[in-house]
Length: 64
Ligand code: SF4
Ligand code: SF4
Image (cartoon, rainbow, N blue to C red; front, side, top):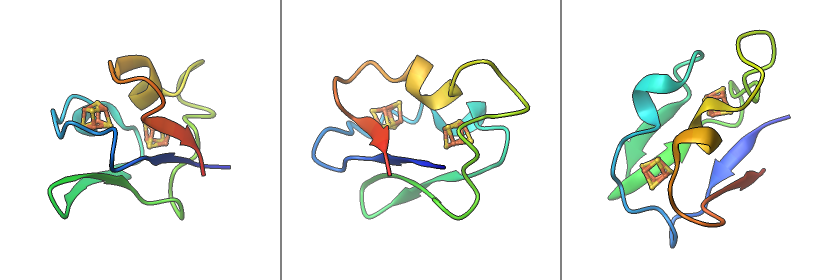
């Protein structure tokens, strides 16, 4: 289970990056990217995916 960032919707604000408990979010090619190999959807750390909770853009962070 993992989430992904839709590059056309991401404004590269960077708000999500420091919130990720697994360090799965990093800048890539002018926007931000989630490493789907390490994203846990925050299970075991938080009740809600922290990146999804923080992102203000519609349909930007979606299931991978
Ligand atoms: S919070 Fe949303 S818009 Fe901002 S960098 Fe993360 S995915 Fe992109
Ligand atoms: S869902 Fe959680 S673990 Fe996955 S990228 Fe977002 S903040 Fe990181």
